[in-house]
Image 1 (cartoon, rainbow, N blue to C red):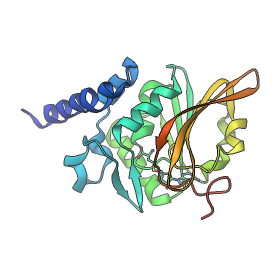
Image 2: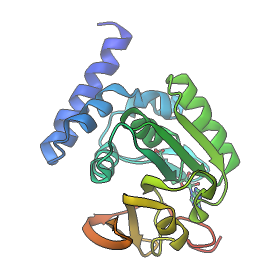
Image 3: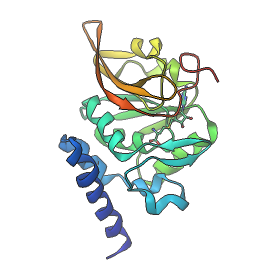
Length: 217
Ligand code: SAH
């Protein structure tokens, strides 16, 4: 088996055993998870663990999320090919690459400059060209390109930052882990005719969202 086939097989197994078997059935999401080379988004020393059923360290105390959680959050966003997407917490750039595969344009905000640089390198290494990494406090959103059809927060928030609600388009969806620093619940907010409704999807654990409308640095 060639090196390339080995990674493709690892991705097929990841999707079948960790993701589809646990109830993610959106075929567009499964196909994105089969195509994005996750091993190019983890530090070289963790490459052989890239398709394991767990989060992995990416440096500076941050993590790339477990593949299953990436799939669940992506499915909850209900992306359409024409969507403009905002991600808060760029990290390795992997989740942004999945979003970019399913939507038109992704802006991903990362507060740690070194981590943002790594995300940029990982994305260009994987040939993803419709994701822009921005350095800054994502709890303020990115008003310059608002509104967004979908917003994803990939760090633990005490509550959904109000600027992000403001930057949702009509019909837009926002998915975030909301709760305490140690344990959060996945929430999806949907904006219809100006009114925002919330649905809850169970417990998760993320690294903290630090910033003006997050936890204090
Ligand atoms: N989505 C990432 C994983 C994110 S880990 C991936 O696919 O790899 C959470 C990231 O959120 C960390 O890199 C952390 O530095 C970042 N972060 C925390 N608070 C933030 C804020 N206020 N704005 C932007 N990024 C933030």
